[in-house]
Image (cartoon, rainbow, N blue to C red; front, side):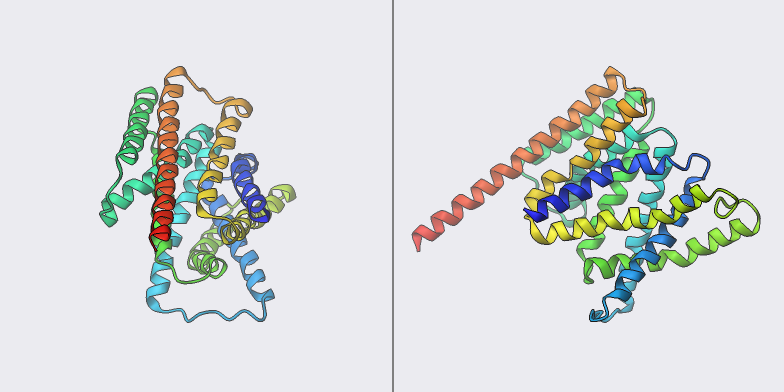
Length: 296
């Protein structure tokens, strides 16, 4: 039960992220991203240093390259998210994380040549229909949502090949990004366009705290994954975009038309079908295991 609470906490905090990143209306998204990387690295480094008995596995050039790709993808995801939140596109960010599981399925087909079951195809086609409907509503592709889904889905694919423990892996990812991020922030401070240490202590404190805000849910998530089945994580993952959607519509009062609602409804229906397929597949697997046990 502890693992479920960790998972609930992680996804709830991720869902509430728009409230935090909206606290920097006058700070460009790229600067926010730079601070997020630098202070996350400081927090992670402190945690690693505190674990004196921890022994790091050997890090090869291949591992560094793999985590460099992962770092690039998660950095792009973080930038898009902060940019979208401050641009008043919280509803669209929620769409991105609603369709991420279905994008992962589609990537499995395209990258790993996986074969989908009939209901999985129905779920993917419903999501595509929803995106098409939203394209009509917006007058263009919902590129923020698609960018978030593709970047995070690709990040997940790369992490499947990762060999380091979650904490050490995340530290290596931020280590790959921290030097260019720090150099960028120093350059901005030098030419007078930086938002840090320019007379607003509240903003400075919030930017620094962004490291804890970023790392905290990740550590809670890692603790949850170790304690609960992945099927439970699959259900919990919809908490975050649901909270984001509710914030966008009811707190930030973003425009949400009936056409947009119909597009979201198709995506939500696709997720229901996707969940139903997973449930049926697990029942079939359990039934086969019972039959095999009886046969022996």
